Length: 315
Image 1: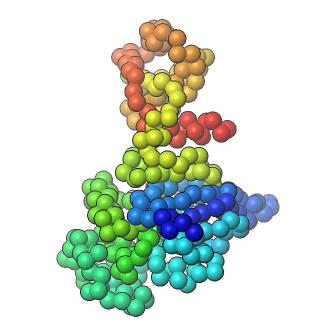
Image 2 (image 1 turned 45 degrees about the vertical axis):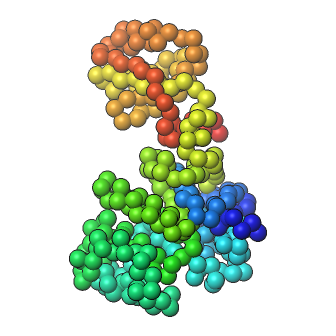
């Protein structure tokens, strides 16, 4: 195995059998997933809920076996060497999974003992995080805020000094300030040469990773740096707004020369089938349909624009 890679996945697939009232359905969770994560890299798996992110992380954490394919973590085979791998990874699942009835300090001590270490031995790794929750060290974990729970979970995942840190949706459900603080923490952890792979459904977090994999329906759409993915967007992109955004979305989607139209916050992003179309003509057509304060401006694509375009191309 290449020593430069902390994680190597080749053709990993996973299916589940789901019972419905009428039949058993074979559900594709992962389909032919292949990727490498370099040692010390901050790598993001970006996609919506139900795309397969959690299944992939449960495979990487040795909690479930893939149906096919191979996985190596720190050069060790996921199946043959799972006991050793568990000692070398830190895993923070999507749902808060610590002991709700134990205090902050008690939870940390439990995890330190599980990995045959002490809080003091690797305290330097968690010091900056733990300092923020130390005033609540005697509070039960179940009584912490969402941001504090995430920080405690991260401390427990780091207490044994893992080589690889697996974070499944670490910022889900926390406030914007806590999200920013969490990413500041990850940047500092990278300085310790810890390989970090995380998943998120927040497209704006993609740009904070060195490389990302966009995932949909259990398959990767593209793997590259956020900057390269944006630069590879092939279409001219415009934002369109008016005083009636709901009607505007419906009207834009009825116009024959508009290729794509998706709502993005306070505007709709569109691409055209024919770049030669006059945008003044589009504005006039919208005003004819009763729209006022119509504004059309050219913009640069975001990761979310790229994701939507990739999804459209595979349909």
